[in-house]
Image (cartoon, rainbow, N blue to C red; front, side):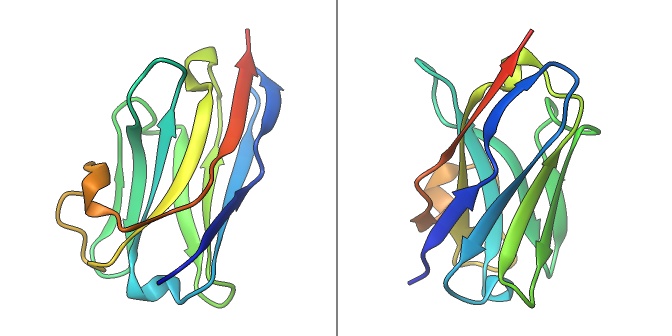
Length: 124
């Protein structure tokens, strides 16, 4: 079992950048890691995933603006978010998939472990 703790959320203006962090209690190289988000009244939405065996994968809505990466020495996954838009406002969740070569990275049911989330608010 792995515990995940997100940080780095906040209130920013449109066009600004934020970097989210997800600290894991286990070796992130043993998992595929993902970021999801959920806005009020909406379903949880896939944002990005990383596998150290396969590579990275992004939702179309964030491609070119967000970058997922990881520091294996610190067992921390990052989500660098640039050119933020008001529609990026949501609670952002980090998740771990026990399959290190993720099969369906966009499906939240593939992820066994979740963090508590961090709020990102982007004002116009």
